[in-house]
Image 1: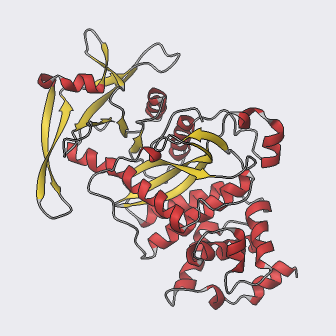
Image 2 (image 1 turned 30 degrees about the vertical axis):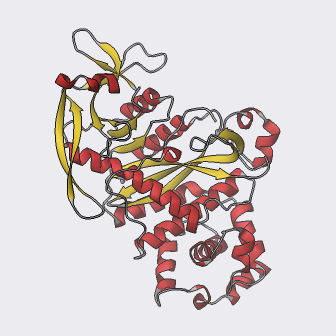
Length: 414
């Protein structure tokens, strides 16, 4: 018996039990559902230790802090390091089972993607690079990740992650080798990752076909993203910038922008929605739609524009202090209120990203390898989902989707 295996045997089931009396049994059932197909028993056991630690250890969720947590023995550091950084377990089937579990245990209504910027020191962690922070204007050293979320009600559940590489990480073979980056992970922009998520989900018939809710206000390939989703016949509700180009007119097509098109009062319709304000009173909120459906310009290299009809939604700032916000949706037969409710799915994902960073350690991984990062992020997602599905609720989503440019899907470049 190895030292690691013996250490596990010395940890009784009550040793990692915390919270409610049946927490240990619930966790074992959850682990069987999500990690049950892993062939090696010690992988499943260390997965349960890591899950428990992500939930119950306070502060930063580094391997050293986790390993020092009571009641884990001293040898746990070696076992957890092996499980996260060296063990060859495949995170893809684990994430797929996690996705199926969320879909089965909730009533999901949308897929969405949110960005996570992970500050880093040094230059050796997979994907680390320097980029300008959109909010502060400062240059930061960071990893850039995209999370895939399945949203139900006011809760959004992380089910997959991608690292956006690029730059030297596409060309420097030695750096890629040290970080153990697969050959296939090259030349993928943020937009590519979104379309890949949709393509992979479309191949899983047991998952519900749901609309995609995206924030594309800072994306420089909006047409490419929507063209990719159109090929997959995926519906969308996406926020876009005021200068997003659209095609209008049937006899003589005209390329214009959503804001310019909505300035023509005779071409728009006003819908009045009722909003419950935080202090109690109900407020009437105007939302404008364009009377006709619009299309999108042709993606790069294509001869024909995107012929799929989109509806424009314009939401003026309720306080009259800021610019209007705009959405494009393929759900042209649904009520305006329903489209805006779907739009809040992205706010739920941003709330989940915040909780994942504060309590579940997605910012805390200190390893450098690509597989190690994906193992850690998979475990953080599993910990978050376990907590949310077992009675511990997160923050409620605000009545309206907040402006959060850091969570928007930004452009293709790093």
